[in-house]
Amino acid sequence: MIEKGETAIRSWKKELLGFVCCLLALVIFCAGASAVVLPKRYDYGSTWDMYLKEEEDTIDVMFFGSSLAYCDVVPATIYQGTGITSYVMAGPEQTMPITYRYLRQACKTQSPQVVFIEATGMFYPAHSRSTAVNICYMPWSLDRLALTFQVAEPSEWPGLLFPLYSYHSRWTELTWQEVGEGLFGYGPDDLAGYTFLEQVYPVTAFTQRDMGSHPEAYQQSLQAVEDILAFCEEEGIRAVFYLAPTAEPLTGEELSRLETDLAARGGELWDCNQDVDALGLDLSVDFFDADHFNYRGAEKFSRCLGEHLLSLGLTPTEGEDEALWQQRVEHFTTLRDEADEKPIQLSGAALQQ
Image 1 (cartoon, rainbow, N blue to C red):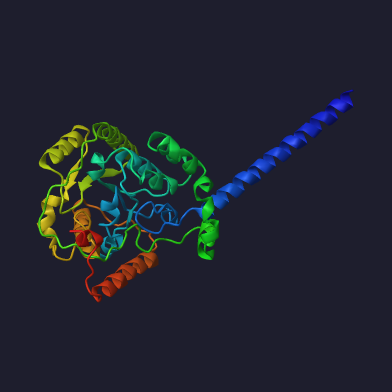
Image 2: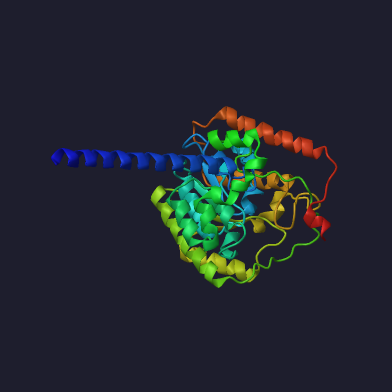
């Protein structure tokens, strides 16, 4: 009877082990398949796969926020003028709670001296069509899971938890490049998170931007600000909230409210719209739309950012991949020079005027 019992136990253990192995194989297959079918992302924010190719602890400054960060900040220009390395880890229509989780995730591989957070996201609604995009390209982590259940709609949970659920139909349109990048990863980003925009929106007048009223979302953003400041204090990082220069700045009431609420929590705000004259902008060719620069305006603003970083007392951290950063400078220069030679093309925003 004892031998039969021992045999049954051994058989049960083998079956359990077999089940665990099958389950593990299924998980690995689904993870690999999800990475392959997920649409590849090279620009317009949330470029996590390329960010994770950066050598650890080689980024001095990081920029977070919405498209007002990834369309306006050129790390190659900052590096060329100062030797300071920077990266834009922003996302489309990124709210402050998402920015907080992006910051935590980004600092798992980098130790920036300063983080700049574009603060227009304080006034965004809590959820938008870009919420899922901000989440689904994040590495798998507690921060990603927290965002999934805190800011995504329940209808988005299946696709965020199991990307294969949302993108399985892409099998027929995959290229070999996508398969390779899905399985083996991307290379480093030659623009370090910046998105190059060529088209032109001639600005004829500055007007105030109507952000709408989202009181509940604003309170959530204030809590996220407190979380951001607490995290930065723990990590010894200086946090600077800033407002990117636009042709549609916040209203005086919104700006005053933002300044007061940030100051009450120990945050500092740099309103770059107050320094817009110093940028030397050409309003006829430097904007992509009323809110974003094209490459011309972004380069001018990034030179200003470099000077501001030096004024904060930042010094470059040694150990960066100099060849990669020189490649980034050359890549942006090539894109700029090629764009300069083309006839000016109006952006969609300009054509809709």
